[in-house]
Length: 536
Image 1 (cartoon, rainbow, N blue to C red):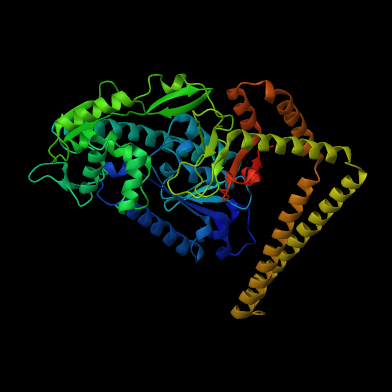
Image 2: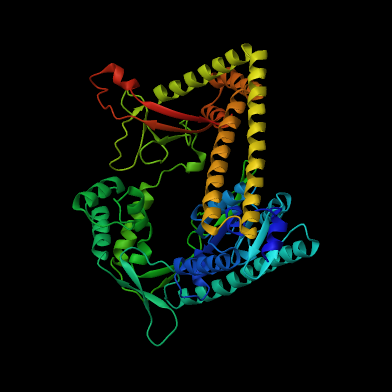
């Protein structure tokens, strides 16, 4: 087994204990799998899978896969776009430092649509990355392995779709019988197994008094979500997340008023995919004909209060659909709060002479607001300065820059040569151990020293690569036309066009401001910090 793995990895002179550095463990369990008839908690299943894989690694290589090479994922989505950890794995296997991905079964890698399955197959094939499972090693260069792998993914997709149909049929039947169709109970309830029949219902827990308080404040004190949030936090009441209450949490409780009135619903918000600007996005519009049935669980609000809430919500709904509103914020979706990481929002003011501000809407966040146009102008100035600096670098790019780059390349070549020498020394160490020249302690000490040298050399190579990139003229040549186009078009564009121009250049901006003395100090308005990360 070991010799076969070394041959597949093209690492014949590496110790078997070192092979684990070239292997990634990928663990995935869908939250939907909890509904497939398995009562074991998802986290427990993931731990069990990890234990199986580490036991296999221990038996095969003599040691476990290091923690830095393990990627765990608990997601509901089936597509690559909804799975951030598999995205990291696919990015890492482009690097020759990783030779294989170890998983409990090939279906863990992909069971989504045909496009995602093709992406997985193509990525592993082109990068020559092997797939290890406790029962089999897959080499996609082998025609039989490739066929088996593709068939396995296809069958997994068929089984998933079949299971979803069966589950949906059973859930609809449960809803019609007034049973709880969801795996996670709403805040204020716990799930309870029905006596002498299949299925579950809900029962009150201690948090239900908080839910009642939310409805009382909304219906009888005429408070909105923001004021309710403030009151709940002042009272120190527990939230669904265990952290401070947010307006979104309050709105979720109000949105689920039918459940709190003793009803069960099904597919009130069904996932609908659609194309927007050539990209597939998931939407969850309210269905006009979702299922509503009287449930078996107790209610905390009456039918009359439910109707009051619906009427009040209808009266507070904006007359114009949000999709028809024009964008008002040119930096929308680009600027994030440096404290909480959420998107900064535009707050308009109706009073004459007051300018719209850029604020963080997170309750209790210390970030101070700044007029939106001030932040926008600061971003524009930064981009103009970047263009000026890039043009200056290009105008001063001389023969000396090329010489410096060549010297760095030569230094990198020398370090790579040294790496090869050290690898040969490691091979000699193995020979000395086999012939008895080294005892085991001397062998391990020497190997540890050589591994440290390899790590130091790799760090030096990474530093040189960054310096070479900084000396590369092409980086600036490609960026300058984009920045010039931005400079020429920005002021003539609509707010939407400005937003698109900024999105083409900027990856993300982190905004930070703690000085709130703008009323008395005119200079304090500019006392903020922007950490701008460019795409170019």
